[in-house]
Image (tube, rainbow, N blue to C red; front, side, top):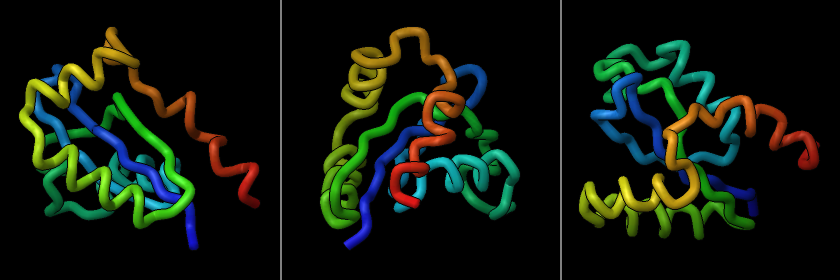
Amino acid sequence: MKAGFIYIMTNKNNTTLYIGVTSHLPNRVVEHRQNKYQNSFTSRYNLYKLVYWESFQEIGDAITREKQLKAGSRQRKIDLINTTNPHWKDLYEDIKDIMDPFY
């Protein structure tokens, strides 16, 4: 089974949040940034900044975690981001090579 990731994207003003799941985090963030899906939520709201992510050994576990996060309140999501990324820094540079050990 594939590894999985959950992630939270936001816009430059940190006003809108998007939670997603993927098996290849760097590629997925690039897709968001390049507006690969022009009618998507992230494209409509300019959500290009990665502010939170978690990794899982299996994609099924990531999907379970994604559902858990989506069911939570906005404040819980904000608190989660603040625990690991209090300045809401864009984390893309930190994860762009994260898949190298898998190849």
